[in-house]
Length: 512
Image (cartoon, rainbow, N blue to C red; front, side, top):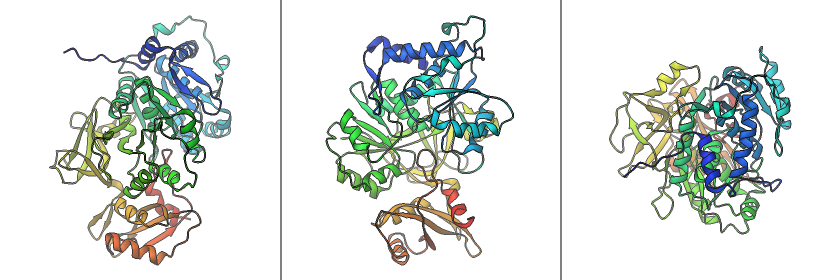
């Protein structure tokens, strides 16, 4: 049997889609009702790509994008990578110092900037010594191509066709400590990531995905953008997530799936607004952080929509495991089994351990990054033993091959020599009816080395006695693991994906 031949570059994928189904709609903007077909995508990226080449910057140069989600930012990304350059989506919640570092470290030649991001980017650029040109990006009309410089030498797009191994995306991780690392993902990495989404969730051209996460985060970019591109399906892409318009968009555009993070599921669940007609919605997808089983069950019971829990990371273009689509067996509390790649739970020497034994989760596959940009030592520490990527997550495999995650290696709380997984404490607190969000963290302790504390956010119009919370927690997990102190806060520090940045909680409570 002949092996299936997939497009090798993102440009090839766009040409393939246009040739097979030029009239099929890829992008829809809910704000303007603008629709863009695969044929229009091809024409637009060719026009933008040719202008980028005519600037004379070297093939493989970095070009940054500072924009909320829009059809224009999607098309610009495709144009940049299809014409042989590297796209650098800028994290708009990172702060000017981190943005300045990202722009400098990535060696960005241009930054395409939406109007509402200009002050932020100007502030970041001021921190730099070198000059970088800012180009206006209109979310409806696209980039201001007339502002790009031009050289006299005639260079054609077809002369600068990227290869499958060329870097297409430089995505900076929102690390909890230190400066972010630039994850290098090639064309083949991104296409593999898109295929694993499409085939893992049985997405085809009849589907419509809703993008509720920023595409400057790997989940938004690889799950919804690449997943719909590779499956030749439709993507509805609002400028931002709003819990108040969420169900209306699904109903109006007949969306069949969406990918969200646990925080969003919690907000949707606790919003009093009831959905209208959501009969088109066949599944929801959870990723980027473990989903509380309590929230999982309540969401499914209230809305009748199955949540497919998954696991992924920036270094793998998102997804590495997934639960199957119903009627396949989903295990609540598990992000599922390996799909499209290999998963191993390893010991300190990165050798496989038996099912049921806890170790570090490692992954190998076509979606694994090429490395960290200009950080070979970090790359060497992360990709070990002939291609196994260390995820930094602790967990185990059950006898059926399902992964169960107990926490991050760096986030473990070691109290009196006993390892306590913060997630276990989180889930005990989240089981209390007054708690919207919860996150446990370590605090230095003279007696035990570290002690357990936690921050919680309460649901609206709810109050609770801290003594009652502690009593509830002790009943759930025992006194030893129960937080010594519980702090009520209005919000938890999060990265762009909505994942709680647990290592910042100590600073939040004790450095203020």
